[in-house]
Length: 295
Image (tube, rainbow, N blue to C red; front, side, top):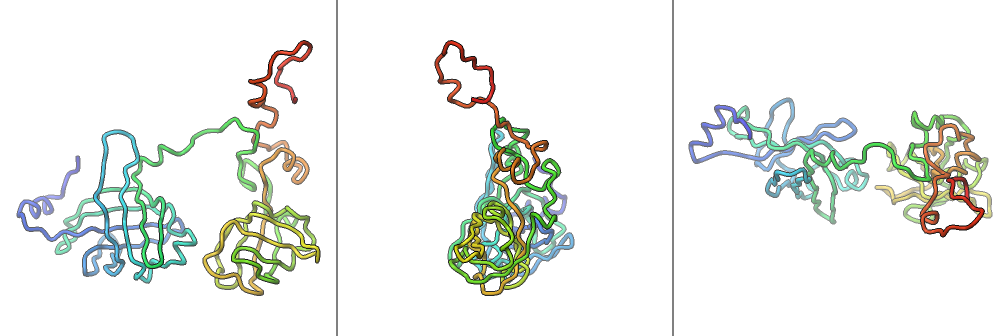
């Protein structure tokens, strides 16, 4: 149950209302944006709510159970602050959302209807639909560790302990030849073994994608000796000749990689010797004990 400000309650009791929806979005990079379905700019709490966003919202749905309630916000790519490039680049993913009901003639008369986060963003050529998830979606996040063969740490974090700023795991290079929308041959990586940067990250230093970080799918070495980098997804802007980047090593979470590449088995966060499904299905055999040892 929500308690409405006295002024807003009186306004609602009049029957004829001047209400608008306002959305305040805080992206993971800290930038705050305001949008409204009203035809004029509204301002409150230090945020300016832009009317030219093309935002329209579905109804707010709330259930009595712990299921994730969602609301869709549909918009046309006409706002200067909502660009197709930023949507493709994931800058709006998981942004915090506040949804307000506001009397546009007297903005202190307002009520916060919902808090949540941006979920899935579906986009077309000229419009997008963003899913706004309620705070209940946090309850769906995994908590704790899983018993699995692979490591569940992130390479370079506190649990892993590898320093990715070490020159052994970090390099700078430039695009030598763009091959496909997400692949290119690179100069500056000749001293690194093939596969070192697979599953790693690449940060663009110059070019149209400067400032953006992407994931690396494969790091190969061509017969000419040049490194060939394939990204997990095409970047927001086209890869161009001589674009400079900084690339960091990756890890496939396997025990052998942790041991042979990083010599970091003391910090391995998986269970490589845990018996698998084959142990459950194996029939008893005299002289062979299922004692959990390596098979």
